[in-house]
Length: 298
Image (cartoon, rainbow, N blue to C red; front, side, top):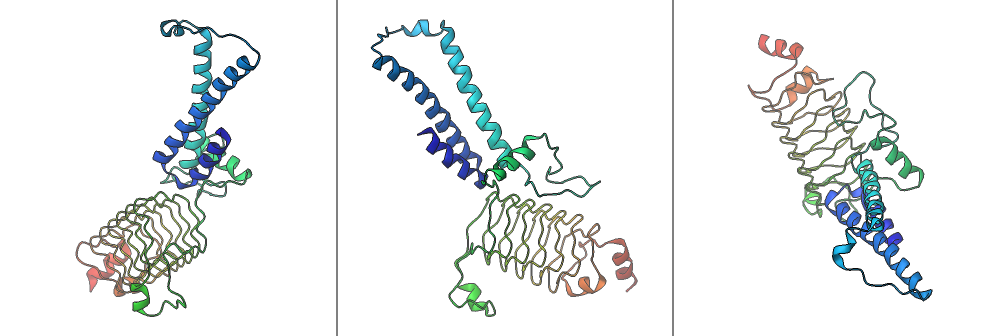
């Protein structure tokens, strides 16, 4: 019984859901404690040993009781630490740029539980981060071509509102129209992912990788896009109004009709005058110095 629950707990860790994980921990520790106690009772019974009932008030004066409780507490603490390392951890292959401060606390030492627990689980064949590579999170139509607007309207949209997908690998994932509002997408890998018309309002994408991702018509209003690499991404028609873009990389990204109203672009990398000319901006859009100067001269 405890082994079965432990397997469920291990498999559930990649969901990064503390509510469900806490329930698993309580049930698992309870099952282990019950297993040990019932085993001792069974052994005593089979040996014909007679156990006298102990008054409840005397239980508090037995050293054996405190010893067992200490072992149970130790087991619970160990499972909690492993859960913490898996849920709040950093993938073994993730590298932080030297000299830069990680926005998502990924610059942890090898001795940190958030570093060695994912490594341990990975070595045991149980990754603690979601694997969405080429997965159809949204249900596409048969014979999908993605060229007609009618096709997109008929997609059954994935529902991941508020989900914790830190460091997930969503390479070429099909996320058309998916509800990812308020989701934790820190460090997520979205290489060539299809996110057309996806709802990413208030989502946290700090330090994520969106190389060549298709974000046409996506809603990124008020999203946290600090440090995101949008190199080669298609953001045409997307809404980035009020989004945080500090140190984001927009090199070679398509900003045709992208709504950048009320957005600060002062520290954005790779941004050109040609991109700004095709985007939707207003007086509240803050441009980098070299682009702001050229706009003021016009």
